[in-house]
Amino acid sequence: MIPRLSQGLADLAGKLASGIAPETTSRFAMANTGMIAMLLGALAQEAERAVASRMTDISEMKDLFAALDADAGDPAQSQARREFLARQPASLALGDVEALHAEGLELLIALHAWAEDADADLNRKIWDFLLRHTERHRLDPG
Amino acid sequence: MHPQLQPLSEQLAAYLTRRWDEPVTVTSIEQIPGGASRETYRVGLHTPAGERGVIVRRDPKTSLIDTERALEYRTYEAVHGSGIPVPEPLILEEDPRHLERPFSVMSEIAGCQSAVATLFEPPYAEQRQRIGERKWSLMGRLAALDPGELGVTDFMAEPEHPAAHELDYWAGVIAADALHPQPVAQAAIRWLRRHLPEPSPRRCLVHGDFRSGNFLFDEHGDIHGILDWEMAHIGDPLEDLAWSLDPLWAWPERELAGGLLPREEAIRIWEAASGMPVDRAALRWWQVFASLKGVAIWISSTEDFVMGESKEPILAVAGWLMTDRQNRILVDRLHPASTHQYAEPLEPLEPLL
Picture 1 (cartoon, each protein chain N blue to C red):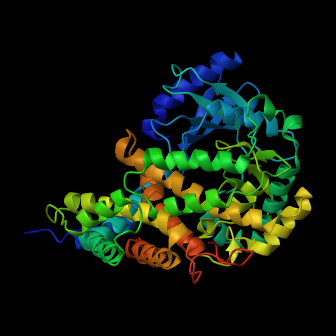
Picture 2 (tube, rainbow over the protein chains, first blue to last red; picture 1 turned 180 degrees about the vertical axis):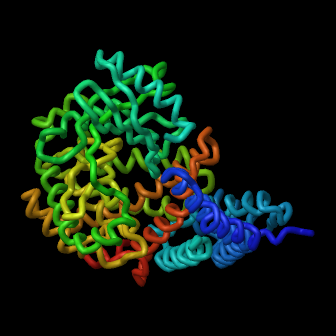
Picture 3 (cartoon, chains in turn purple, yellow; picture 1 turned 180 degrees about the horizontal axis):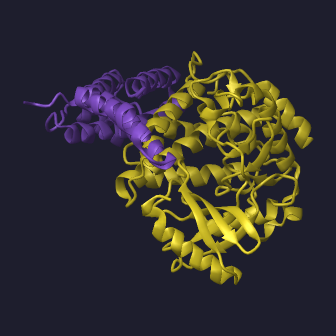
């Protein structure tokens, strides 16, 4: 049977919080057990969406980069962004997706620094992306 | 006594017997949860003079905050007796042979609470107004104290430009510890560099982490001890005030700073106690900085959890959950068209471009 990853983590979190934490014999152990249950809840939330949320970030960053004038920012950064547009993660394994995600974010950081001084509309679009990005990755483990 | 704490108990009794040159036995020992920067133990002692309680803080294998234990201990020594309530410092032992790692011993302030969650439970919930008044009054009084007269200038540097100094330090922490690019934090760092305030004409002892959760309160709403001075430094008087107002400390509470008082009331109490009017533009800078410093601490915590020897869950809670919340606060602060979902609009109210 292939484990249902997210559900399994959430169920274990629930068991730890309600079935095991009350049986611990010290406040320290109870607090740690509660924290671990909360973290398992966060992992359950993240496991379900980890690849999808990073791929959405990558796709939205590509949309931002593709809409730019060719001379936006310094030439080396422009070239790097063009190369990024053509790339896909080596696989859908999380590590491969994270590697490309990190490359995109580094390019975005450099572009944002340029846009703050040179392009108010682009600056606003990048902040809109960062708003969606943080909401996409928010953790509500309960 | 938990069996796992028996060896520590025996080591401590032997050490204190030698140190105080009198027979000391440990009658109880309990690890206190939530100590992210030090392992913290509440210890009951039997001595020839009678029973007494102490708090032992031992260096962990890895820490949420890279702190200097001697600086923290000397700060307790300087503040104790100044009118700002702190536990009495008793021993600083930096030789790791005694308890495997360096540690300090302080008198216990018994009968108090510190956890933020407790503020929302009876009988403390109805005392939140009074606790808040005491909290920001003490913070203002601390800001009014002269660092030279306190004696902290003997062991703390006095930066020429506190805001620039703090920003450089915490931006450096992010650069060193981030395991993934941080576009929100980097945008905040650039904003803070562009809007550096003039150095305040006043310098004070900054606690560095003066927030709900770091002081001891009782059921009557009195505060008996300000804790966790490991990030103390000489700096700008507005730094502690801004840190205490960050929305993170009462999350998801929006209206009450630290879950205690409306922000404007907290600021008025601080102004009255410190004798300093608040420069709102400077406070706005320090509030953005406070959220950026928070991100830096949580990023450092993540790095400690992933790369370090300790796998304490508090490091992951800080690293994963707090980074997420603090990033959302920063976007809320800095987005040119923020709807202020997580943080109040900062005065002056023009967009933070």
